[in-house]
Length: 220
Image 1 (cartoon, rainbow, N blue to C red):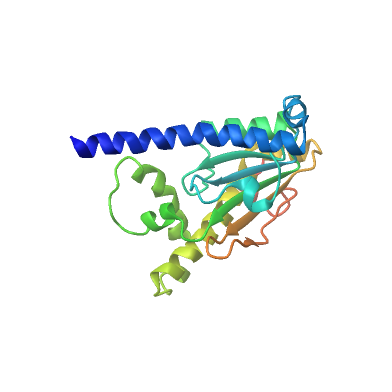
Image 2 (tube, rainbow, N blue to C red; image 1 turned 120 degrees about the vertical axis):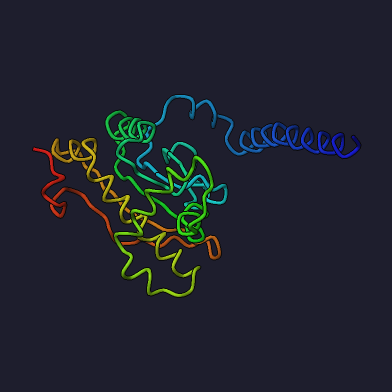
C-alpha cells in the first residue's frame, strides 16, 4: 500500500509539473514578445511538413532550431509512409493541398526502437503488423544488410533504407503526384537524425517531380 501511495504521489507531481511548466513557458515567452500568442493564434502557414518517428527524443522544432508554426508534424513508429494509412494520408493531404507546404521531409533516427524490433524476429503483439512494413524494406535490401555482422550497424543501415523507401512511398501517392502535375512547388526529402551527436544527415534522395519514378507508379 505504501508503494502505491508513493507512486501515486510521484505521478501527481509529474502531472502538476507539466502544468507548471506551461505557465513558465507562457511567462518566459511573453517577456521576450508580448504579442507572441496573439500573432500565433492568427493562423498557420508552415513551409515544411515533417514525417518523423514518435520517439520522444526527436522533436522536430527543437532539433532544427525552428519556432512553433514553422513545421507541420506527423509522427508514428519508425516514420512510416504506408499507402493504406488514412491518418498519415489525411495529414499529408492537408499539408500539401491546404497549407501548401514547400518541403516534405521523412526523418528517421539511428537507434530506432521500431527498426530494431523489426529485425529481432521476436513477437511484440499488435505492433507486429506495423513492423511488417519495415521487414519488407529489409527484404528489398537483404543482400547488403545480411553482410553487416554488427547488429547496431545493420540496424542503422536499415534506418537509412527505411527512410529512403518511405520517401519513395511519399512520391507514389496521388497527393504528391497531383501537386507536381499542377505545377505546385514541392520537394520531398529523406533525413536521419543522430541521437548521439544531434546531427542530421541528408540522405540525398530528394525529389521535385516524378521524373525518376518507376513508370508503373505514375498517374496520368
